Amino acid sequence: MAPSSEVGLLVTGFVGIVVVVLLITTRLKVHPFLALVIGALGIGLVAGEKPAAVVQSVTSGAGGTLGQTGLILVLGAILGTVLAESGAIRRLATVLTRGRSLRTVPWMVSLLAFVVALPLFFEVALAVLLPLLFSIAREVETTMLDSEGRDAKGRRTSPYLLVGVPALGTVASIHALVPPHPGPTAAATALHTEVGTVIGYGLPVAVITMVVSGQFLAGPIARRVFPVPPPRLVEQFTLKADDRTPPGIALSVIPVVLPLILVVGQSVVTVAHLTGGWASALGFVGQPVVALLIAVILAVIGLGWARGVSGQQLKGQVDDSIAAIAPILLIIGGGGALSGVMLDSGIGKAIAHLTHGLGVSPLILAWVIAALIRLAVGSATVAIITASGIVAPMVPETPGLHPALVVLALGCGSIIFPHINNAASWQVKESFGMSLTDMFKSFTVIETTVSLLGFGCVLAISALA
Image 1 (cartoon, one colour):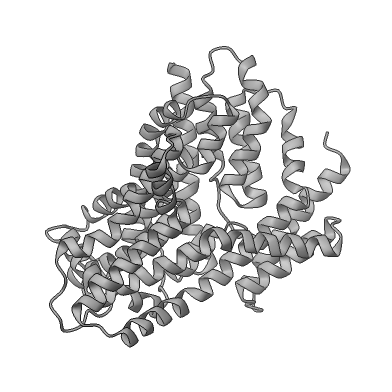
Image 2 (image 1 turned 90 degrees about the horizontal axis):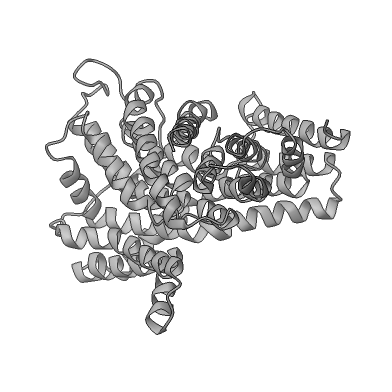
């Protein structure tokens, strides 16, 4: 039986989240950023934090989230805008969709997202993918759907979700199950298992979940949810190559691929514990912020100055890209504030204590604890790292249970049911111009499918091992 104080924390967290949802969705129509900050402050105070501590939780939660993703999102937006203005993205989208059909485009997007997601965190991967997704969606809209947005069978279809769903399913699968992503990597360390073994088990499971969540859900979701992405953001990414001849495919691809190569190189250096001057240099340029900055500089030089674009025009492109991404950054920061309060107020620990003495298999317990912490604090990385510390002592006492499978169970639980305290949910919602309801019908369904199906695969592997 949980102590009454812990029950009170759980009730406070639940009621606080409900209040935030009502502020956003009822007639009040409070801006999500304000609703999230109000909810975070209210939850912290009711949970018993001192006022100064609540403010610190809000500011550190928002600052920590933006510190991790804000620079990367801005640099990704700038890169996407320069690529779009030069015609490079349109060239890529045309090449990627040439000869494709509505059946094959989602497969092509999954493959593209798989390559991008391997070295990058969820928010970072989405920032890199977004310009390509919007441009491919525009090509689908203009070449594969009629003037009313219907396919050959007369079904109304959202081009943005037809390409967005497989991308989101793929990125979510890789993020939760495959090192060197921070969650599964940290859990492998906590459970004293080799990262390579986790990759060996996790990669096939991730392929299964990305295919099911991406390919099988793309059509049904795209025919039921019709978001309207912010026009200003779409224009930044899909508009308007000027009258110049579009750049060649090599010049168009290099700024997209180079950051991925650098980040993969940095991951290899870290995982292999390589040392030396070249390893240090690669470790520096492979940091996502630095890698994206290098790509932006190359794009400005190769796709801008070298093609006759003036410095003033390029400055205007950068200004426009930052203005377009600013509302999304605010809302992501608000989600981080709520997550910080939920964590600092003790709600995450209350969930852990509630589930610690249930006496079930560490495999099931890992999924349950990670899922509950995820629901409370929003962060998949926090959920998997916190839960791994709870279940780690139980694993050696369970004969025949491979710790790598426990890592995967933790990863699956850590992405269950993303909602309003999850920063990625707001990034997806605002980037695609969804209502809160549409976000639940699409992104929440996608990640929950990955979570449940992935855990089913883990149980099957455990039974056969």
